[in-house]
Structure formats: C-alpha cells, structure tokens
Amino acid sequence: MPDSTPSSLKTPRVRFAPSPTGYLHVGSARTFIFNWLFARHNNGTMVLRLDDTDVERNTEASVQSIFEGLRWLGLNWDEEYKQSERLALHRQQAEAIFARGRAYRDFTPAHSGDEGQSSTQGAWLCNPGMRELSKEASDRRAAAGEPFALRYLVPRGQGRTLQFVDRVYGEQSKLADEVEDFALLRSDGMPTYHLASCVDDADLRITHIIRGQDHLTNTYKHLLLFEALGAEAPQFAHLPLLVAPDGSKLSKRKHGPVVSVTTYRDAGFLPQAFVNFLCLLGWSPKNDRDFLTLEEIRAVFTLEGVNRANAVVNFTDTALSSSDLDSFDAKAVWLNAEHIRALPVDELARRLEPFFERAGMHASPEKLLAVTPLIRERIKLLRDAVPAADFFFLPQLAPYDPAELVPLKKGESTGDVALARRVLETALQALATTPFDHDSLDKTLREAAASLGLKAGPMFQPIRVAVCGRKNAPPLFETMVVLGREVCLERIRQAEQSLQSLA
RNA sequence: GUCCCCGUCGUCUAGCCCGGCCUAGGACACCGCCCUUUCACGGCGAUAACACGGGUUCAAAUCCCGUCGGGGACGCCA
Image (cartoon, rainbow, N blue to C red; front, side):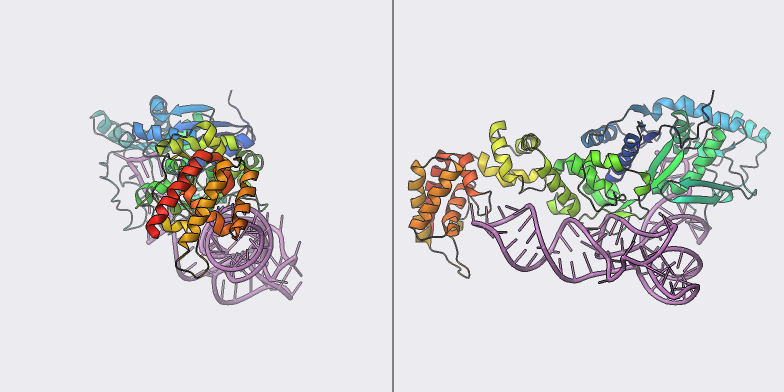
C-alpha cells in the first residue's frame, strides 16, 4: 500500500549523491554537511549514494578520495548505495516511462561533446522529427538495431506550468514548453543522471533533496520525471553556490587544491573548524555567533536560515603555485585557531603528533603533552606546530644568526656584544644550580638581571635565542622547564661560542 | 542567444517576509592603543556597506518598477 503521507510531514530521508569524478571538493562537502544537519536535526535518515553512472569519467581513486574526505569530516550516514549496482531498476523504469507514452526514441546521432550548438538560436529543446516519429517507424528502426537515446516527451503547446516551492528560494515556476526533451537513456543503454537520480530518489523514498543551486533549473525536469514515475516529488532546497574570489563557480581545474577537502585536512584544519566555516557560508544562526560546535549547529539548523546569495570562499590566488599558508580564507583559519584553543590539551597533543611525524621528528607523547600548552595559542593550523616547536625535538639547534643573541635598543643598529656575553655567562652560572621549575627560574633570572643592572627584556632575549634558536618563542621559563637543565646549559654554551664570531 | 537566480562593510553575515526601535549590528582581515620577557593570546578603539534610478508612503536597507552588475542552467556530464 502506497504511503500517502505528504513528503513534508514524513520523517526526513535525505541523500548526498556525489559523482566520483575527482576528489571531494568544498562545495560538495558543504552540501553533504547541510544534508547531514537537516537529517540529524530532524531525526531523519542520511543516505550516501554514489552517482557513478558516467563510466567514462568515474575512477576508483576518486571514490576513495571522497570517502577519505567524508570520513575526515566525521559525519556519519545511515545507508549507502551505488547507482552502478542499480542499473536494472533504472532501465526498467525507463521502459515503464516509455510504455506510458512519456518518452520517445531519438535516433539522432550523439553529439560529439561540449561544443553545443545551443548558443546560436536560443536554447535547444528537441531534435526535430523525432518526437513525431510514428510508433511503427520507431519500432522498426529500433528492431533494425539502429541506436537511439530515450528522451522524455516534455508536454508542449499545452501552456502547462511546472511549479514547486523551494525551501530556500521560495516559489518557482516555469513553462513546460521551455524545458528541453532531456535524455533518459543513452544510446548505449546507460541511464543518464536525471533518470538514475530520480528513479533512485523515488525508490529510496527520499523526502528532501538538498543540493547546489546549479540544479535549480534542472528541478523542472525532475518534477516531470517523478510524475512519470508515479511518485510524489520530494521537497527541494537549493543551496547558494560557493564561488571563488573572482565570483566564478569553484572549479577543481581552475582553482586547484584549495577546493579539495584533503588540502584543508593536510594543512592542519580541525574537521570541526572546517565544518563550522563551511556552515557559515550561506547559513547563519542569526544571533551574531560564529564560533559554533557541531552540536550547537545541529541543534539550531534550519533550511530557513539558509541565504540565497552566493558566498565567496576568500582564498588567495597564490593557491596554484604553492601550499602557502596564507592562501586559505582568513576566517577559516581564525575559526581553526579558535577550535584548536577549545580542544583539551591531551587531545590537541594527539592531533599534533602526525604532523611532527611527517616532519621527521620523533615527539614522544609525554614531551608533546608538555609542549602543547606552550604552543596552542601560537598556532592557527596544526601544521604550524612544527615550525613553532621544532627546537623542543631537534637534538641540535638549526644554525641561527649570532647577532640575534645581542639585544638592540630602540634606534640602534649594532648592539652590545659584550653585554650579551655577560648575560649568558651570568645565566650559565645561575642556571647550574637553581631548581628547574617555573618560579625558581623566574626568581633566579630576574635577580641575575638586577645584578647586571638590566631589565627583563635585554636579559631574557639572549637566553631565549640561545635556547630556542630564535627571538620569537613561547614564554621562556616554561620552555626551559620542558627542555631541561642539560639542554639549556649546553645551548647557552654554544651561544657563547658563536658570539665570538661577532667580536 | 533563451530561461532562471542573486545584489548590505574587502570577505562571511544580522536586519528585509510583518516599512519607523538602523545616525545599519556582529565576525574575520587591516590599522592603532593597552597588557607583556619576545611572539602569541586577551582587552579596547578606529576605518569600512544598504549597486543605481524612479516610484509608493508622514517614513524604505526593508514594498513596487526599471537599469546596471554578478552568477547559474540550457549535453546521449553529473
């Protein structure tokens, strides 16, 4: 018995239907996220369906890459399908539509590709002569083995208006006469996207189709298809597009790695931050908040909160040339920094480990746990941790300019080398015996500064550079505690040595 | 070309449906100041937008029309 409950009242069943023709890109990821949020907010079901009917362009690597991306996002789904395994259903339904007189055979040879002759005299609607072919002629040619595509017989000349209410864009309508006779089956018998998609949506009882706005005008075709299938059309919600800074649609070919989800993962974005960022592109909680946890978003997410204007992913266009940190959208980076700071230290430490691993540094869990609090406010992306904390793990400091050891007063171009040497000597003596904990170091070193008639700044800089190999580093005492007495003394001695080259 | 969608600070957006509370709010970025042993975090502050033109109205970012601008769709791709 058919379920007559209107789709708007049923428990939602939504689907994310990527086609495996490349890696998962940010636009697709956002569509997935919005579907997930809608499903989870409404206690609905999330379906993942691989739309892999284009045998030519589908690759296994792409399937893997998509799963990899989705897994990283950490959002689950409840059911999984592959369109290529449902071919029989698609063909059977195409036959049924044909049998109902809603489709016809088109024997016109396939067009070679994307040249398209549509731009010259308005839109292409159908191949003349083919709609009107008599049943006999059509059957005869088919029986003779002439290849044909099956096309939807769009109602023409009846003044019929197709309409639907989009959950984001509102009331939409269009004259059926303006819709092309789209293909259902290709001449090789394979279903097209439109056919396979609608047949599966109907069969899987999808209640809400949430997808990119680039499908808005395709919806009329789909309405026609659901009708011919004898299925109630689901609700539609189209999402504004994600565009590049120049306003064009994000494309893998044109914009490169910045549109791939794995690029964000590899750069050290936290999935929750990435999701947070993507959600803010085209949706808003409307309460001036922007740092949100997944759970907070899920709790308040509604389609009514989605806007209609395209959103710019504001990456820098140096993206093609390098893996430049600055190439990411600044807000995404900021959100990531916020999420990093919101993470418990032990979890952050665990997340950081693979980045050190990849950089060839063995960071023991204990040491990493000690170092993490010192850098967590100093990194925006996880991978920033490596340059920020390398000196903790390197057995030998990378070479640095000894001049860094010498503090400069305002306006001075050359510092007092002798002073720097005195500082280091004093420090060496003091540090040889003082207990290596924060407060003792604080007290000892400040007293040492006083004894030299120095303020903290000029006292600490030579030590910091000696110990860290650079001027900018985490707070000195905590750093020294983690490094330990041996390492600190050794590095200060080396610094003293290198100072000689300046004398 | 035809059809469709969109147009608030540089960017993401609130406000628009149900005109007045909007001398347009928040966030990021940028700049400045404060905090401070460096860097960062944090705090404070500054600059910055209703695409344009007509209506309607006592009153328009909000309603209507037009213009311009941007985007999308028009495949035997998805």
